[in-house]
Length: 144
Figure 1 (tube, rainbow, N blue to C red):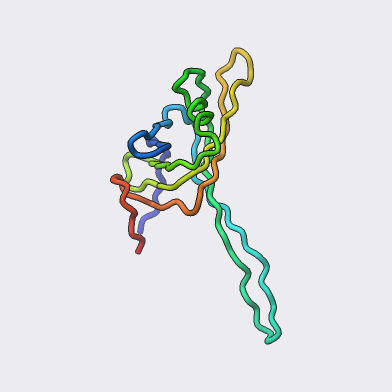
Figure 2: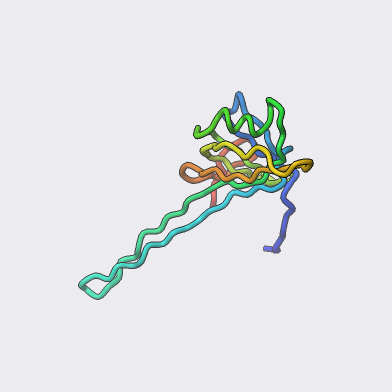
């Protein structure tokens, strides 16, 4: 297999249920789906063996959005849906066939910043459970 590297974008990030999805990619200057794994210490047992400690992975979606003060802005969407768990669909590149689907908890974004400047809002939404890779139709990809 030949090693490759792809450019992030043009792609998309959709939040919400299929019938009312909100595309927010046009406001994003940075975006990632990030895992964080945690490993507990191994436990020695009387027999001299060791029982492996528990392991877990938590996921977040993180990004930076250009601030927009209109009623239809990302900030207003996040305020309206604050602390709600909503589906997301992240497509890193429209030129490739892998997207990521999951559920995240929306939190309000920062509004404001430096005067006379275009401000941005950094955000981090927790992902509920595990995100899954899907194809362009939203069908889960079977990993072999």
